[in-house]
Image (cartoon, rainbow, N blue to C red; front, side, top):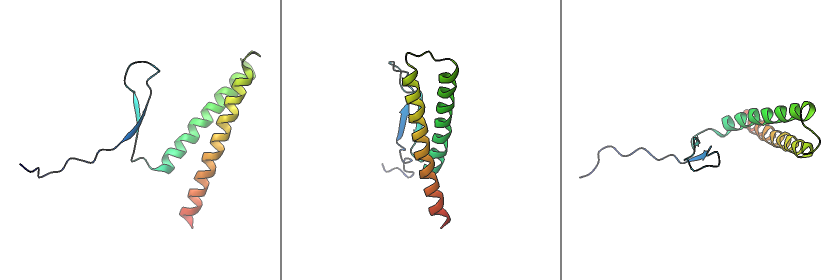
Length: 96
């Protein structure tokens, strides 16, 4: 027997949030998310990482391990700059 209504298309997603344990992932990113929306959210997440690590390094971190935290902060800052540059490029192309 033929189906009259087709199945909806499957939407592959990127899963995350297993907490390095045996349970299935808690979260997923939908495949149909617009790239610009995802990049804006990524900038906000990277800003939060940067600000949190910066505060911790300046006020709470002891010398052993502080260098690794500064590395995390600079990596987040670099990634944020890359994503912001990509967003600026996408915006410029959309305007022209």
